[in-house]
Image (cartoon, rainbow, N blue to C red; front, side):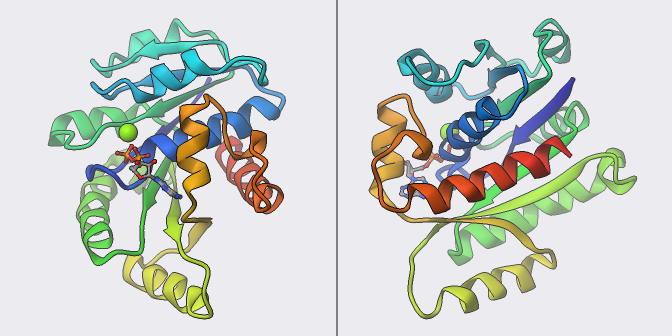
Amino acid sequence: MRVISVVNSKGGVGKTTVSTNLACALARSDVRLTLADADYQKSLTRWNAARSGYPAIAGCLDFRKLDADALKAAKTDVVLVDGRAGLRKQSLQDLITLSDVLVVPLSASPLDVDATLALMKAVNENKGVRKNRIAVHFVLNRVRKSPATARVVAEVEEKLGAPVAVVLPDSVEFQRMVQAGGGMFESGHPGRVAIGTDLMRLADLCLG
Ligand SMILES: Nc1ncnc2c1ncn2[C@@H]1O[C@H](COP(=O)(O)OP(=O)(O)O)[C@@H](O)[C@H]1O
Ligand SMILES: [Mg+2]
């Protein structure tokens, strides 16, 4: 079983938005998928309950206690964890250790980049990450399309000292689709195909 965890200690960076859209991409891949909601706000749980008529997901576990045994009981190929903001040091290490892949969303805002650099200090202390057993993929979220986009992405990559795996645009359609229990795949947005392709690429990266 592969555990993919969407993490960032900062709130509002897009963990749940990325989780729901990555869940849609994974549901379209040939894997059995269970969701695990670590957030007290339960947004992922509500999203999954609102989801009907879309490719199947096995269910959504209450994962607030970060209990690794609860994941083993899922008995699916992949568990996708939506992390929560403000995880304490030990809880963060526990979540990283039970993961095979970390997906780290952030926007290009200096506040998000600084918070992510602080997060990465803790991530890079983890033995599994140091030994390359746990992969890390950054998602640059809420990027506004402009002639400066490539420079914005390059600047974030330089600060992170690592490439960004996927860039997602700033679009109210993400907000609308979370409400509807769907993802960009199911939206009528003109950017749906390009965004869907990027999300499938992220899913492939996560599946190794
Ligand atoms: N790419 C995006 N475009 C537009 N709005 C977004 C995007 N990503 C996130 N949001 C909005 O930003 C807010 C925070 O996103 P959310 O996924 O809830 O972050 P987190 O789970 O990290 O707290 C939400 O209102 C969400 O709808
Ligand atoms: Mg969230």
